[in-house]
Image (tube, rainbow, N blue to C red; front, side, top):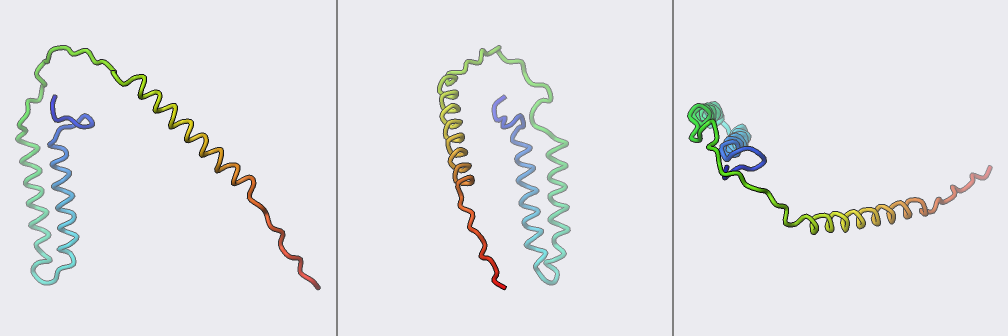
Length: 115
């Protein structure tokens, strides 16, 4: 399954891109005056038609073609855990330094009011 990101294909990203652009265009056209302001309806309907076409006529098969079984090997297992340990040590060290600064922060006495 080539082209999959986060478990979804390129079509989902294409639909998201279309709607983000339509929302941006509608926001820009809402500031326009006159007849250009009413073109928001046509932009929205055009995006709706494109979305319906892309949803009703998918290019890929609904059922994936069975592939040869692949064995997944994690080649960076040790490096990943070494990096995780290093970042954890940095985080704990930074947390310790922040907490010591918080605990050791001086508390200044407020001046007494004289009567």
